[in-house]
Length: 270
View (cartoon, rainbow, N blue to C red):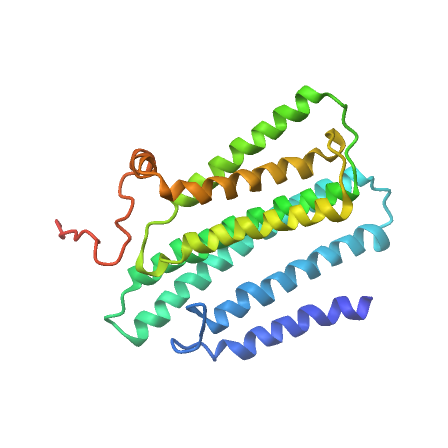
C-alpha cells in the first residue's frame, strides 16, 4: 500500500513533464488541446483520488489519534473543497491555454466562436448530464437502501407533485440554455434523448426490483417523477405556438447574440 501511494504521484508528475512539450494547436480532443485535456481529465482526477486515499490512510493508519466519523467527514469535506477549487483553476488554465495555442498558430483565429463552443456545448452538456447522473445515482441507491421516513401520504404525494414541477423547470432551464447556434443544432435533441434514457432506466428498475410506493423509496419516486415530467413536457413543448412566446418572456438580455454572425461590434472609444 505504501509503495503504491508513493509511485502514483511520481508517475503522474513525470507524465505531466514528458507530455508538456507535445502541446500543439493541431492535437486536440473535443477542441481542447490534447495535453491540457490529459492534465484536466486524467492527471488532475488521478492526483485527487491519490490525495484522498493518502489522507484517509494517514487518518486511519498512521496518526495515533482517536478521530470520530464526524471529524473525518469534516476533514474530508474541507480537503475536497480545496481540491475542487484547484481543479477549477486547472480547468480555467486548460481552456485559456487552448485559446493561446490556437491564436499563436493563427492570429486570425476566432477565439470568440471557440469560447462559445465550450460555453454552449461543453459546459451545458456536462452540467445537465452530470446533474441527471447524480439524481439517478441517488435514486437507484434508494431502491436498494430504503429511507427511514414516516409513512405520511400527504408528504409523499406532495413530493411527487414537487418532482413533476422540478421536471418542468429542469426542461425549461435546459431549453433556455440552447441559443440555437450552428454548433448547437443537435443540443436539444441530445438533451431529450438523455431525458428518455434516464426515464427508461428508472422504468426498468421499477419492473425489475418493484420498489414500494411509499416514503421509504421517496428518492426513487421523486427522481422518477422529475424525468417523467421532463420527457412529457419535452414531447409537446415545441409543438405549441405559445412556447415561443414563453421563451421570449423568459430569455435574458443578450440571449442569442452568441450565434455565429450575430455578434455586436464594439468600437474602441479610448
